Length: 315
Image 1 (cartoon, rainbow, N blue to C red):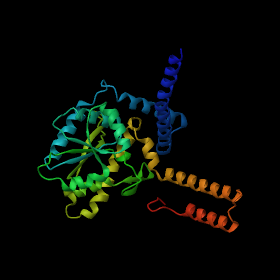
Image 2 (spheres, rainbow, N blue to C red):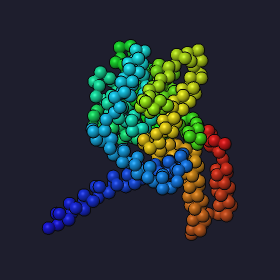
Image 3 (cartoon, helix red, strand yellow):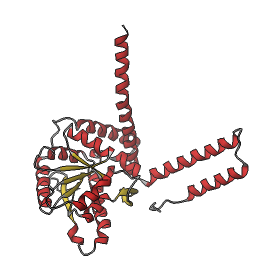
Image 4 (cartoon, one colour):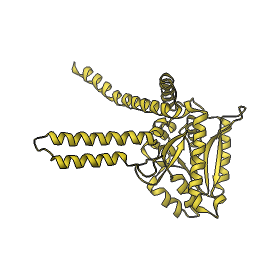
């Protein structure tokens, strides 16, 4: 008689984790929408709900990619591969994920995902179990530099909004008027050997799909490679910003963009300092009391940390 009860408990337990993950994703998405778009609380909540639903719908094979955008992208990839391996830095957008799923059906393309936990989760949802080669971020630059002429040309796929920012090189940019810390990985790959960087941009012509393929070629800066990193970074993020502006309800990365914002970093830093202040106060009140001088020194150091602006922070 106990088995149905235990089975029922197990089912509730196994479904609780995805529900909590969805709730966290929804909450963080709402924070990002509210911060970057400045919408009302009700509009923000409604858009966050709709975005979560669209993310779940990526599993459905019935959701089709625009044939025009797919054909345009395939032509751009063919042109890029004529000059070696290339990089597609895609926005975390519903159309981009559907495009990637359609490209995965093409056996003639060697797709290599720039791997990270967040990118893996998103791509797995889009591919619905289809296999795709992966390459860790720390191995990618070395792989691009040592690629020989006999190597099969690859189309590297990255999601710039989803890169981990705890390691590696970052820069501060303005995204929809807000200071954000972003990875410069795509720019580094361009100056390390990849000739072409592809992404999606917005299109003003209402008679065509609202997104289009755009490309950046490093040969433009062959005489001044020192500028190539910053110019490629600005070029890429200007297009990601344009896509977010024209179709905010299709973007799946508001949560990641919010975490990358200087605003969020400031809040996290302030919370950490408050926790340290509470720790030293508890220590001062404990039986093994912290001396008054040491306590004051600790508070002074924490105050200095609070006033210190980290490198790259916006003014």
